[in-house]
Length: 482
Image (cartoon, rainbow, N blue to C red; front, side):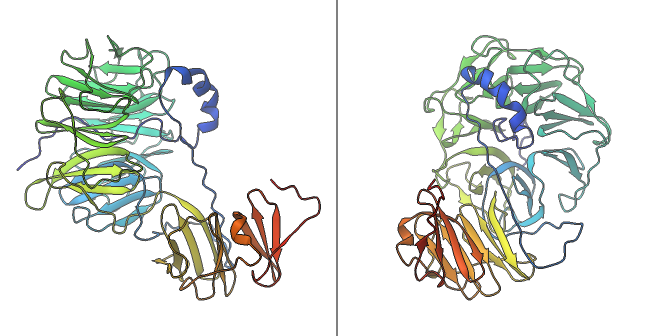
């Protein structure tokens, strides 16, 4: 069975964090926050690598093992599935059953033509002509934060954060700005879509349309879609256009001249992140999972059995042929990628080998490197990060971690809820070292100074131990407590 190819918007929402331009946008956001129903998440990642090895002027991406994480975008070509995450691109050749990490670029979106896959990054575009095995940077003047991509014939369109729309007619080697007529605030492109000769641009100021390959644009903000409407995604089913916003679903049956709310069966104020039109069914990814409509959007039913519920965001959806000729549906979430082989009735996690969305802490000594990944156990590598395995949870359990400290023979793990753990066998087992009531002090960070341990706490100042945690004393003096 051949999967019908229609407009599929699988780009992440614009209010995903723009790490490189966040601070320059605070002033703009503060002025417009009252007319946008969205949340700006910001994550600050500090990675400090301490090891007694020579520093080389080159970097190699390392895969931190079988963990999940936020999936921004998905590309599918039969059995090959490729995901874009905050930690890079992952690739599967068996319908998502197993994965390998390809690179470490912050990847926000994908688009495909007959022979290439294009990936939008936080600083430009890369492409692959071998189904994602290798990637090159073909662009000479595209160095923007690329939020969305779309292909129309031999033309590639790229939407950016704050810099408008660009197009390329030479496989991404050169780019030309094409955003004339979009109006104020429309340089923030969240998603792009192509339907026949029409090109749609979802912006933070409504919806724009071009019928001449992007040379000119007109806004189609009519009725309930206005010039201040934040549009996340778009999908087209025949003559029906769907758009998703941070709070509602809208539908037009007259090419965008008029719009109506299309939220029967959806919870109030449900944010819509992605739209997938697959044959006669319409799927949407929302803050509350996946919903399906079998009547062209007149009503919606939840289709999230097996998907994570907390958090429940589904950022991207796409479809591809399954092994038995059926249709596979793929959903990108905060907890990795999920697969449905029964048209959304049930979903199964497919994260064996994928890379997590964030490394909270990494440190090492010699060839031994330890890493803490958000929502995952501690990982350990004994070959400078080439291969990884999960450290034992013996004595440790499932906890969150504020930090790690590694010496030549000992690993210390700081947890905010139960104190400090120590391992003397490279993470094989762990013991609490909370002598003197340290377990009640919410430790924040630890350093080893000579033979002493020094710990900062959230609201109780600094403590030190001279006997490997058997007892702890307050540092006292003039040190403030918070």
